[in-house]
Image 1: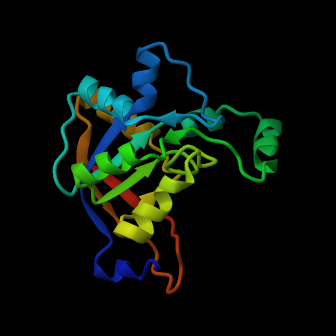
Image 2: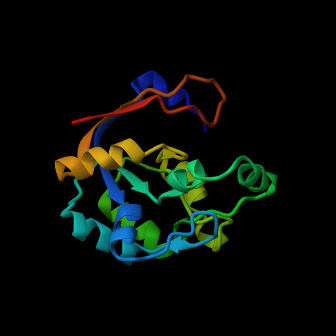
Length: 186
């Protein structure tokens, strides 16, 4: 599997942001972006309900965990320490059957987040390693390390968390990843 599918037009559709970081802030939940912590489906549902967000078939799901916000606040020494990890820990969505069922039932076309791995890392349940299920099993693209800070502010300002999203990744024959080159339009 590679990214040659971009020949067919890339990724275009309705994007939906679940702003977990803002929800956590409003609910006095301390974020720990550089620790392995799983965000459960029940939590994602709470975030969705608090935003008044509903999903449609083919939506592109974005989850803002606050990882980029926290990373931007690190000192140079802290960045170097984080980079020294062989497998740097990060919070993300839970690797579970429940998560897979929820993603499948929502019929998302793609998923993306602001953390290094869409799922909590290192993976806590290799039977449900989301990368294998989503990419290889379903052919569902995963976006990682998206800077969702400006998008979060715009969604909050407008009081809506859906937008038109377009991304045409680089065509790299045999390549398995690409910068997204994505844009959200309201």
